[in-house]
Image (tube, rainbow, N blue to C red; front, side, top):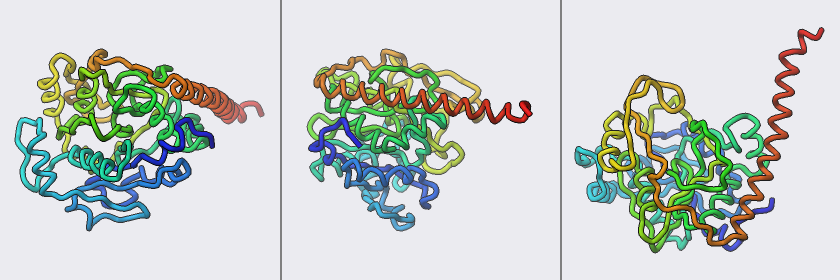
Length: 330
């Protein structure tokens, strides 16, 4: 497999799966995407969780990095953005784990951390279809994402660069654009890293921190790299979601976030609830390419993946048509 990111940069990446409340491995489908990362050159893959959960968790070949509960509460209390203050031993959200993952990467001397939610079920280019998933599996799975996201981090002003959630219907052919990484992203750590705030919409807040800085840093998405998450479980963060999180986000960023009541969730399921929408120019700092050669290599790689997908999609469509019409032809 040929990679875009140079060898000396591939080994300096920590992969951290942020988890909490999903004790059994079968509840954490992200684990199905981890094995291929070693082929890419990533040898540091860890599960990150609160120490109070660690003893109850089913384990695999990847170690658990547990953060102290006392530290989590102290950190949360200093970086809390909800109306009600955190309670000792209560729900803190994922953001202490995200902060701990960054600190763990810094402690290990890594240049960055790839943060993953624990419930990713599909990777696909350019949409979360069967054909799109087949293309990604054929080209390295999560290693492909680690490679291309790393290359964008190193070739641009993006401090945080992520794939796009598959439930967003619009597909852009841009190589990268300002946006809000969520659930699958790489963040550059070390000098200039922003601290994490929470407990809700921590991803939006973090991208906004980078995308409005005076030094020109920004937060980026790679639209053609798509992923989807399981939607049936109420474990993890999902069981704590309510309408107040969107309202509080709008209070913090009134110039960038709008709220309204809709009838469905982004994946088409659920009852009416309050949604937030981030305005198109919420991330103020534009993309700046600093290494044209590496960025062009990302472009060529994505173009090749699109060609592969077109052939795969055409074959899939023909197979479907044949299956549906074969009986009538007789």
